[in-house]
Amino acid sequence: MPEDLSREAMWEIILGLRAELEAAQAKIADLEAQLKKPKKTSRNSSVPSSQTIKQRRDNRRARRGGKPGHAGKSRENQPPDEVLECRAEVCPGCGADLSQQTQTLASMHQIIDIPPVQPQVIEVRQYQATCRCGGCVLGEVPQGYNEPQQIFGPGVHSLLSYLNGTHHIAQQRLAELMQAVFGLDISAGAIVNSLQRSARQLAAPAHDILCDIRRSGVIGSDETGLRVEGANWWLWVLQTPTASYFAAADTRAGDVLEALMFDAVAEVWCSDLFSAQLTAPARRFAVCNAHYLRKLQYAIDVGDTTFAPAFQYLLREALHLARARDDLPPDLYTQQVETVKAAAQHLLTWPVVLEDSRKLQNSLSRHFDKLWVFLERPDVPFDNNASERALRPAVIHRKVIGGFRTEDGATAYATYRTLEDTARKRGQPILHALYEVLGQPFCWLTRTQQLHPLCFSSQ
Image 1 (cartoon, rainbow, N blue to C red):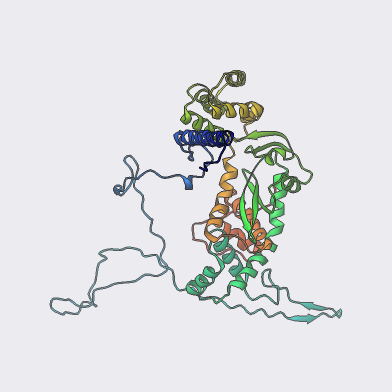
Image 2: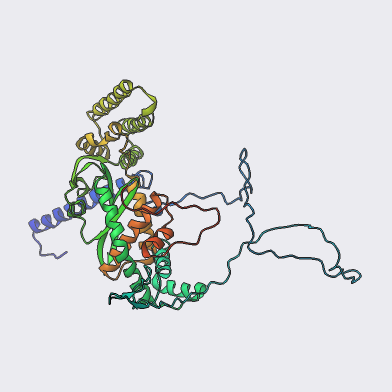
């Protein structure tokens, strides 16, 4: 320190250092308090389960066979397509010829195998005839084979869409798979063109699905991130128990939901507490109680022993009450619902000390009416897990393949997910659905498998 400093200047330096020390001590205390807090996991927050450290599993092998009290099950024999008769020819001991002797069946087992698959080349020859009236009539070409410039048929297009969209195989690896397994030489660029072509044909049934959802009284919704051309996009989903519609958008604003719903207004909208979801065109909103259960669990882990445990217990009791709805007289059920809601309203007036509990209490107060819609209507779920499950394959697709290079690629994938998830909900194999929509009957069926007709429009 310079010797020519005045007393006043030295005091200013000391006071400045004191202020810096107090700020550092406050920051250290805040960091220590955060370290003492329990870590957020998938049990007590919205942290994905993939980011939660898993507990060590017992690596001991489980006993083979059925569980105690359960009957064992094995694959049943099927009518064989080919029979290999393995008869004794020569005795290894004395060399006698045994081929002419009567032999008895000693054992029999079945092997299931797949023969080598080879692409089938179909040449389309369209003829014309001149009618006696003078008109020229062309022969009708089946759907899926009626584009002269196309190289690959609907079977190839369906398989490419299925392997890319459902099994998350990127274009380059998909080209290698098609050549190695099916003996079909196809470039990554041709696969991109095929996916775009299929998406255009799937657009019409996808729009029918969206129209079905618009007519539904209860709609669930959610969104997840996408990467398109190096930018952040979002994949939105609107879903009901029988249909799902996906849309890729470059915004997370509520305008996306308004555009998807057009002029339709849902009776109840099920979602999380994201602000854009709460601006959807709906008369009422139902929030995801599973999110609140996890938040209440975090408050319990932090140290709340009064408000959070009590409200968590009430939510679970309300879920049990909803499940017993059909077993209770209507007047008794209504009375118990009012009792649960009154108890919950009383809990919101309790004084809380912890900051996490206070924030949670305020949130529950603001959205109180949205918590209990599932008790009033049996078609409203307790949570929004159906929307999250619908988005899960898209999250896997993003993690495995990465982002999309073009907007068209993201739109094509959203269209495919619409058909895939809706087919799953309606009990239709997605590959069968693709074959039907793209113009070729699905024929890879076993002798015992029965499929009902494909239908993506409303009944």
